[in-house]
Length: 461
Image: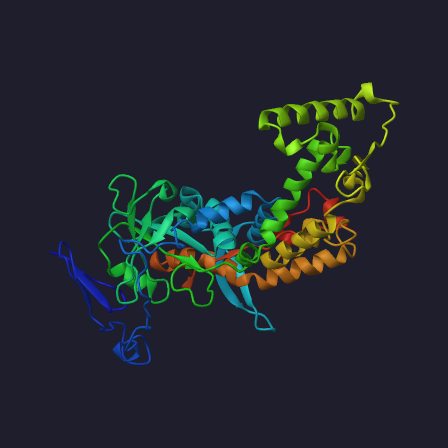
């Protein structure tokens, strides 16, 4: 019977046993190193909210379909999906690299030194880490939540794979003492999917990302697959965090942006046939047909149809070209006042006046602001001008640099599982731990754009 003790002496278990022991007994030397005297006396406090909805899962939104609703709203907008895609691509840059921290420069910045390790190369290729990184960044940018899955080797000594589960399909379990044990995966929540479905639902054990994830994972024996959840913190959200741009949906600006093209589509569709508005005085019907209200409904409908057909033949088509429309007048029997039977108004082509252009630009401006991505980086400048990138080339480059420097937390968040894997697998070079990072995007200038053979790796430094 084999006894397994974690390297830090905090956890242990017996193969085949059902109990994990929390030993809290450092094995790496006296105090001042990593001995028992330096072990934490308590774990971080985890507040717990009252469970909603009952059952096994914590619903995401009142109907458990919040992410599905977000996707539907995005698909109706012409700006938001492209901005989120470009924001993700900018963060991804030239992709993921790994190496060691070789030191610090005079400013105190860490100096990253890239490495080549065959074992890590095999891992990157086998797990398609490039795809994981882009998809994870995108889920973080769209939902503020992402659900990476880690896969252990059969002997549990290495993490050999990483994948990303679609956030739309993931639901947290019910917290117990402030801690969630599982994530439930089902691609059919929108179609009556249930956490208890033995075929369509998969239950994945959860790793607490806030406290000693490596130590806790080494001590567990309940699975070979674990979910390491990621999220951008938002106020008063216990489980599912709320991404900042969701204010567009709640404020109504996303609805405004969607309504304008729908209106213009209808205007385009009807502008060739709708040229005039003909208003018929209510007294006309009594003057021409006698007691109009006393006529049977079928008779009134027939007479109305004849009148409209006659008028339409006069007002439209080539048959009406060059015809004269007389304005007929009648005298109201009750009041004795004369009135015009018909009032004809030509409808202007509002499209020539650019109807709702400013409203559309304002809605787009709110989208860029909420997403946190400057419109100049998309080559547009919302406003009355609605031209190309503002301020020439220098302003977009400054905005680009500012964005990259302030998006560091989002990128570090996506790298958390990879750095956890490096620690779990004891990946080191020269005694220094391996760290992952995103290579910064290549900033194109007129010089680099005209130099196809330029080395992107060299330009990014």
